[in-house]
Amino acid sequence: MRRTGLPGENVSDAGPEGGVGAGEAAVEGGRPWRVALIDHTARMGGGEVALLNLVTSFDERLVKPIVILFSEGPLAEELRKHRIDVEVIPLSQAVLETRKGSLGARSLLKMGVGLKTLRHALRVARRLRKLRVDLVHTNSLKADIIGGIAGRLARRPVIWHVRDRIAEDYLPRTTVRLFRRLMRMIPQYVIANSAATMETLQLPKLKRAAVVHSGIRSFSRIVHDGTAMEQDELLRPMGGQEPVVGIVGRIARWKGQHVFIRAAELVRRRFPAARFRIVGTPLFGEQDYEREIRELTAQLGLAEVLEFAGFSHDVPATMRGFSAAVHASITGEPFGQVVIEAMAAGRPVVATNGGGIPEIVEDGLTGYLVPMDDAPAMADAICRLLADPAAAAEMGRRGRQRVIDRFTIEHTARRVEAVYTDLLHKRSGS
Image (cartoon, rainbow, N blue to C red; front, side, top):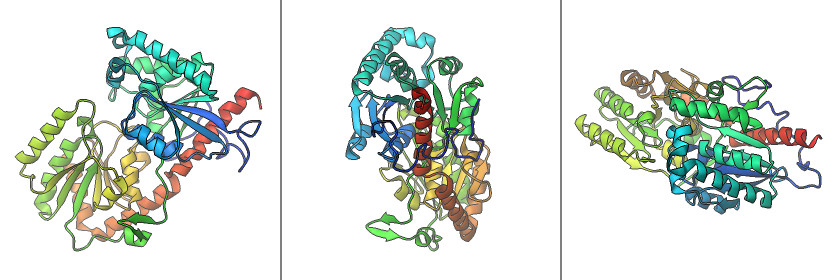
């Protein structure tokens, strides 16, 4: 199996970066590759943010992206703002609301979901042919099935971009088995967002695949409140202010906000001036968990010092309001986009040691890795950062440099373009 992307690497096995020479057209005739990128949802989850970043960073000489969504929503609106072509092909609510954790052969037969899925795939296939796309690139598990089938029906090469660990600690066994089986049948190429994700796929040796880490936008100057901030100013220790420890992400049990709250109670004993912030909202029926952690906050006497800040439309600005950022997932994260965003903002991180996180955080250099579901260990790491602001700021500087070196969207886009070029040139025989 031709594959690169071992832990700590951010590379593709698709050939030289960018795939073709600067300014060289992707295909004969001088036009770029027409690539349909398919996602089942327009809600702004982590995968959708990664998709938005990717399609707005392609080299327009090489790639003409056309995003196909199965519903309207914030992602479609953002794509249009960036003048990206968007096609919305509405999907039955019965299929759209089926949670990825319940996908399996039996669930696809319930309520005619399997038949509705096939009919939708046929509609998408017809649209792909009319759009004259060269390649289909799917971005979510539902899109993998529907878009993947559609791509094969339209006789276009299919890439699955897997952003979920296909493992039984992350998904139900039936879902894991289904996707591993389909992964051998549908896509010609598989991109995984981390080596940890790739390891769970259990791909056969001949399956073409690559690890391509998701990236964020690079920057040398950040504009905040209308004022450009130089890097040294951005990373200056927050002396004289109440330290703020924050966590950003969807409110969901596996994201571990309850562990963060219990750690906050322990940190407050040593640092009474510390304040804590939970940024995010529940999705997909997780409102019960939000009520549970709000009750936990009150029970632990943290209501005066812990803020539920809701959804953030500007994560970089949110991160810059923290003294330290926490990642608390109790199940191995496939990648860890918010960890990258915290490091890009120059903030040291405390993150749970599982999934793709060790590919991002260098323990003791850019932050601390702690065991999953361990509030005392998390609290101890937070206290170490708060006890030495200068050392914490130095961790933040190193973390920011690591992002610039390895985790920008420019790195990601060039490697995905290389995958496209490798796959399509081989298909055309050039």
